[in-house]
Length: 538
Image 1 (cartoon, rainbow, N blue to C red):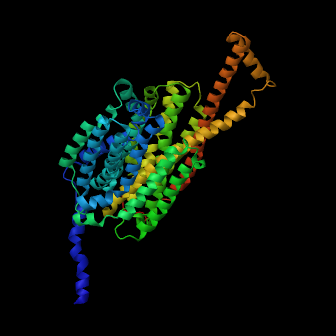
Image 2 (image 1 turned 90 degrees about the vertical axis):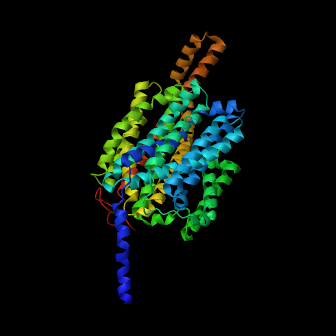
Image 3 (image 1 turned 180 degrees about the vertical axis):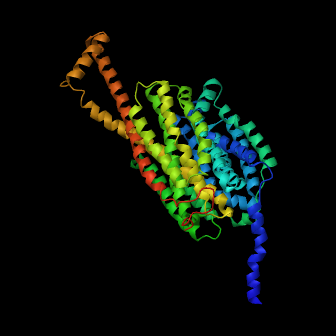
């Protein structure tokens, strides 16, 4: 009898399993995808739209430019802390309800940011905005993953990829235009109508699948220690990265302190979450081979994407004299290329193995960055700058969609919230690290080339003597003319050295992309549109 009872248990669970397998959303999946993508677009846009407005914000609120950078840091720290917490929050109130709560918090905080009278109040509002925004990206991705069957999931992620990649690309353009023509406060106000629309559509179209069963009792089970360690680690990392170059990196006690907070906070977080029964971050998912590799690759994709998005407009503004709006416009062609290529890449994920698509994408990255490193010059035209952006954007869909899709393969549906949270967490962390590292490398390599080129500014160099003499005569001759000639030559030297610094960094990204091609083949070979690949589970 006992044996019979045991044997009957699996049979009793089959109807639920069958219901889970046959579940479909009440609305058209593409309407659901468009709805959650709208909210995610609003949030991702806010990670970059304020960048070009920082001088205006600081000046208007009576703060220094250095103090103004906390407008970005406060948002990014809060955002990074909430990103991996979506799984726990969904277990308390349900995924749809959590998504709607995040939209409300983000929208209200945007309004409060717009009316903030002082910098401290603005920073507090930005923290709440980051908290609300941190839940939008992973929940949007998880909702898309569950709304589409596996064969069409890649196409849904193409839409999400368009949001995640296009929004930070056009953020500086929109932010610059709004700031130049209206007021920096409107970069926050524009979120209000979008947030209201997203909230209404989410309430009408989105529903939780049957395997998500919220329980208010889970509110008492919040992993407070894990949340505290996560906060400590993310604050330490983000502040170290944002303020590192400004404070001469590890020569500063300030940076060393926050770097130590990150290291010890992360070690403590991993140790605690591994043994905790209800962790806020389910790091045991990293035991799944494909998922662990996908997180690593996504961190690199986020890194090269964000680095490229910052480097090119920075080059155009600092060395070619572009305004913020014009520098952003030079990126527009890349956005158009992305819109064209992204759907094709989404369809390709259903026809080719993820690792093959990712490898092709990284190979394209290597070619693109090598081309950029040889063509980014001080005399390039607007059209040439736009072309450089286009060739950098074309590989992104193949890497982004294939890796995102592969991250869910072989994992239970119940883990989709945690998967989306961690994969977005990895992408954002990679972006923060690469932006800081590449920025520091540009500065260091520029100084290296500047010192090397200065060796040629000597009386023994006939070319230098001839150019100095010619410029001296042009500026009227005499001591004043020669001083102006030397100043002009030195300015040209600094610009050339800076351009060479950018070339070096793009070449470094090229070599890193070559290594990423090899890393892509660490993914298990899967059959597109079918279940888990062999060996992917452990």
